[in-house]
Image (tube, rainbow, N blue to C red):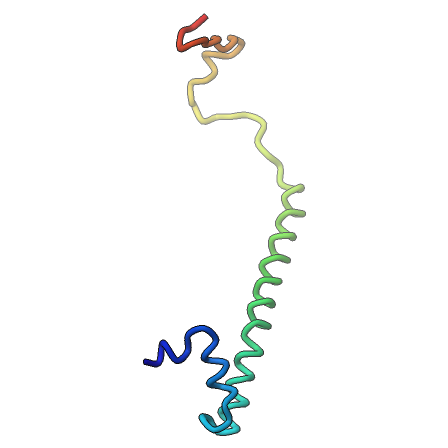
Length: 90
């Protein structure tokens, strides 16, 4: 029953009904409705600023120029890749 009452914006209608809630509860509930999006925007802004900071710090990270993974690709160094046409090597 309560799920149907709050569906499709019913929660806002219920809260705005002065007879259903006392004044104090009404204002506290409306304050939560107003402050929740503000909190979400603030947390999103923090994530954004941290991400931007990491982007600018990334320039100063020295990347490896050699590979020491031992993948075995060194044996093919200098060879041209085989051309494949219609499923057969040319």
